[in-house]
Image 1: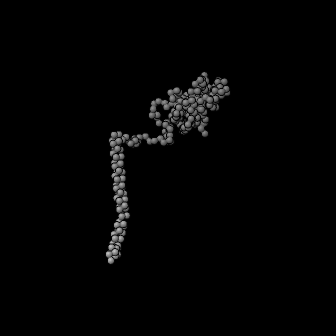
Image 2: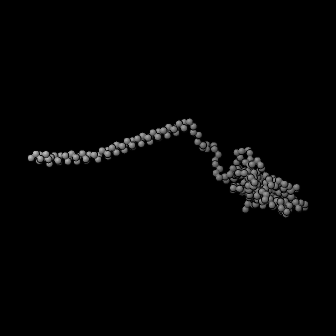
Image 3: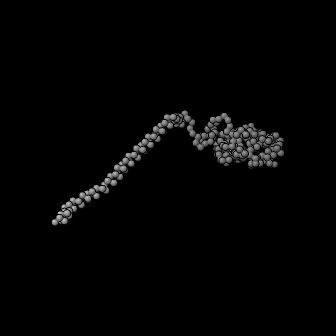
Length: 251
């Protein structure tokens, strides 16, 4: 009878098992809750660091801006001249107006020559070269037929240089017959086109020519008179200088 009383009753075993089950079922919630709290703390700290970094960057930028005044915006005023677009400096407007005056009184050409520039050529400078050539042309087509300064204006070798210096060429033909051209007027009326390339350029100009071909027997009327003709001048960069290479009638 004493051995039977030492054994636990069925009710006691059931109560002990329920207590163990309740204790075991509550243990898995603790890690989940701890992980959730840690996650909230991590998110809060991260947001705090991000906000602090942004505030520091803004204050640094404001300190730099306050130390250097901003430059005023560049914009054309109501009296500013309109843009010329792709037209080169000195090129006449599409309406046919005169080329605008150069903003500088000095030539853009190199000091080595009146017509040399190692970098660029604009329409105004190309026109200056052709005008100077036309003035020099008056001296080589009449006595003393001086071509000593030819290479200041014309590329050597070139088509134009060969025509002026070869036996039977333009100058030799006049000299051998004692002919000469006398110019009453030889001038550029307008520039109609200018095109720039890496080492050459084309200038199209309208030239007024009033001349007489004088011969030992008198003036040759068939080759004399006043006329206007468009010419295309080919200009090349030669040894760092812009010089004439050739010219032809504009068809």
